[in-house]
Figure 1: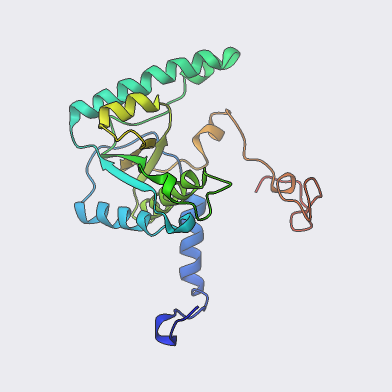
Figure 2 (figure 1 turned 180 degrees about the horizontal axis):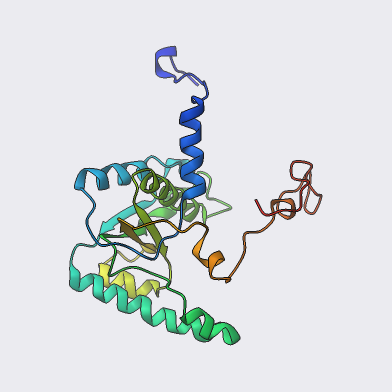
Length: 233
């Protein structure tokens, strides 16, 4: 690495307060479905999208594209696509169909802002880090979404990631190029409060897995000494 000292940032830890703020954003981030209307100031929205754009990406490919949905008719059309998939997903869940239909799974019409996140066309030209794992474009874009999510929490805003849609239908509504792929509809805006714990956990749909069952040492299934307590983390 050919860099002068002036080009480097010192590898010093954050102060205790700064580090605590980072961890607070991580632990208090929630996938929000209930929004309070209002609006997001343009300068705040710019900060959030800029934070997303500073995410890591494999081979520095930066595959993310953001489409802000400000047209109410288009927002309604996207909501209709999501609602259609919600019903189909419920049918696919079998005995949990009624339980699923009682869940609130999106806030497309209530959120102040709606952003579509799209994997850009021309991604095949990026070979670095993708030759054997082409899905690293999706992993990279997911990092951008997480950046935006954490920044939104720091700004006191809520965000929800909606993936209940038929990609071709959304691609058609957004007039995407043939090789582009929508991966998320992000509901963003003011909320009255955050869920004390993930909403799906509150509703009894699922529980956070125990870290002691997810972290291994030196191979699959070898319990890690890092997490010896059989508790949810």
